[in-house]
Length: 167
Image 1 (cartoon, rainbow, N blue to C red):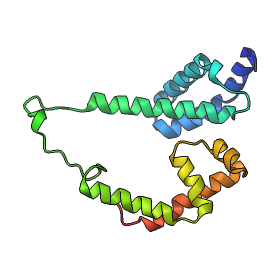
Image 2: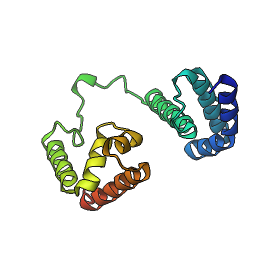
Image 3: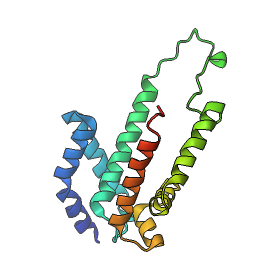
């Protein structure tokens, strides 16, 4: 795809981008900023786009990542540390830390729940957790992309039922 086609395709997605940005930001001005940032990032990274990949999905993934990064940056800048606090002796709660005894137990329970899934759900879900993309899973397992997405969705639903007592 040449540069002009790329830009026309991107321009054709503007309405979709604005709608998604509004959902993410819940604010018109922030949404416009997010669309502008996404457009610039996509154009700057045009050379990284692979022709056989879903263009709209790629652009919206870039948008989502920018939103998440901006959110994390905002949280970091709004975090207040009391200068009178001894930061070396903070009483830090580590319940969610998988290195604590409680966290280690939770990790074992989650792993056990995943292992209890039937292979049709467990294998694609485990691959997804390992970092494989949907299309890579479909290719490796030789099943349709829609089937991969459905199986991962059903695996999540099943795990939510099994692990409903976790916080």
